[in-house]
Amino acid sequence: MKCFHLIVSGRVQGVFFRANVGNKANELGLKGYAKNLENGNVEVVAEGDEEKLKELIEFMRKGPGVAKIENIKITPKEPENFKNFDIRH
Image (cartoon, rainbow, N blue to C red):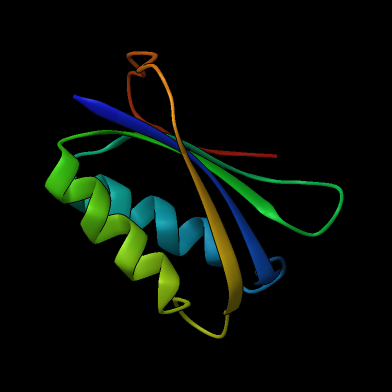
């Protein structure tokens, strides 16, 4: 199992980005969370199968819905054994 910490910048708040990412993560069987940050970015921590994680990252790069992605900073991290994928506030 792999785990990534991602910081997504661009037009990612107020456009259902977290909800779209959460739906895709659940569809792929990934665990973790998506959370709005005060600076306008979104933090995503996702863990699971490496190929499924790559699929989620590609989905995010395309900017689901009306989101416009400027950058995704990806950092590997130790898995935390999340129970599901949450949308955090």
